[in-house]
Every structure is written in structure tokens, then in C-alpha cells.
Image 1 (tube, one colour):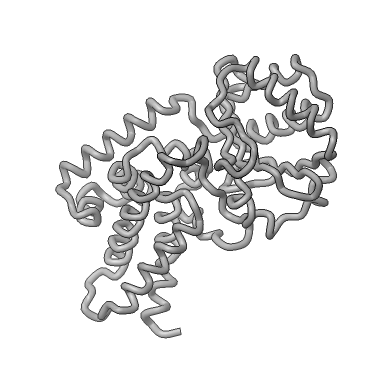
Image 2 (cartoon, rainbow, N blue to C red):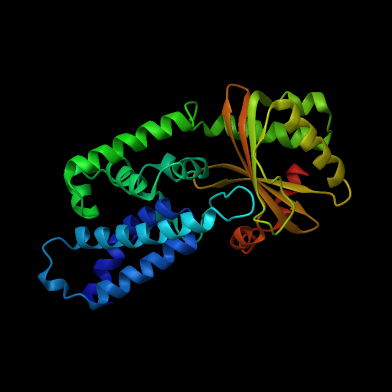
Length: 299
């Protein structure tokens, strides 16, 4: 491996972690890194005082351009859009090189509330620990403008999910209760899982059947999952508890096919938000490295 390639690989964990948090899909992050590599390969690196700063700047600006296009495309997406998880223990263990809670699917979804410019400034400053001056230089803006973007981002995130917290034990416990309730469904048991103002978001992308708008309220969520559990008896579903992006998640199999991935947010002993990723394209990468027989213990 030549020195130029070795230097790129040395910084790759940070570059991928930044691009993935910017875009929410591994494939888009990989595309950004590929473009960054091409520019790096064409660059005379011997004249660079700070190769890491150069790479982070190029990666950030490439990710910004791609995110602006993605934002426009997502406006025409069928139903809610959810981020795509990393393949567990396979392709990108380096993505968790920075603060682990900022890689969770719930946090990536929360970042969707930000404009691309706010998202970039917030991630550089809050997650990757660049000063306002350093982040401003990466983004090509003034330091005051960068500070304002970070401030607006913090405010939007607080407004978007004031109860957001990462409690893996509570999430796993509630997912286990969810599986038990789905195995012997009743409206009372299902209703007891959810906070009164709980929200359900499902991403089918118009490819498979999914609720096209966020669903609110414990009663409505209980009725939805009662119907799902009743219909599921026809194909004997299997469930597998796993960890995706550093947080508990539930893989749901139907007839040997991975039909959805579910993750939750909790407050106390109630689910405040439940997310169901059903888009087959987003599940394909997980399907390639997981097997339904692993789920037997949660049948």
C-alpha cells in the first residue's frame, strides 16, 4: 500500500462516520468516500500542511451536495423516510469511532429536522469536536455564521424530541414485551406498551404496504398491531433481537423473508416512539448477513 492510500485509510473511519451521519444511508456515504478518494488521489498531498483537514473538508462538502439533492428527492418519497442501518459486525465497525449515541437510527432520524447546512455544522462541532473556527473553515463560512447554525440546530433538536434519550436496557426490555404481546395479542396488552402520545412511523417507500403517515396515540397503535398480529398468524412470524447502530432492534421474519426492522424510544415502561423499516431495498443488506433461524428463541 502506497503512503497516499495508507493516509486515506488512516482517516477513513472518521470520514465514513461523518458522511453516514450526514446522509443516513451507508451506500450514499460510501459514494461520498469514493469521490473523496478520487480527489485525494489526484491531489499532490506533499504540499498539504494538514491532510486530515483537507479530507474532512472535501468529504463534508461532497456530503452536503449529496444531502441537498437527497432532501429534494425525499420530499417526493412515498410515506415517511427512515435511515438505513449499518450491517452489524460486517462492513463499518469504524462508524462508531465517535460518540456512540449519535449513530443510533433514532438520532439519525432526528437529524432530518435540520437543514443540510445546520446538520453539517452541528455534526462537525458537537460530534466530531471541531471548534467553531475549524468547522467554519471546513464549511467555507464565517465563524459567527457557523456558531449560529450550531445554535439553531441544537434548538431544533430539543424541540423535535425533548424526551429523546438512549437507554439500551429499557429499549431491549420493551422490545421483548412487544414480542410477547404480539405472540398472544390483546388490545389491553398492546395498549399497555405505549405512552398515550406514542407515535408510530413506518417506511415502506411505496414498495410494500406500510402506514403512509405517522400514527399517533396508544389506542390507534394498539389496534394497528392487533391487526398485524392477527394477520401474521398466517405465515408464522419469527423475531430476532439484535443490535443495530449501537442500539437494540427487532428483526421480523415472515416466511423466511426479513419483512421489517423495528426500533423504539422509551420513557419509563412505555414506548414513546416505534419505527418500522419495511422498504425491501433498505433491508436487503441486512438480509444478506442475517438468517431467520437465529430468531427461534423469540418465535
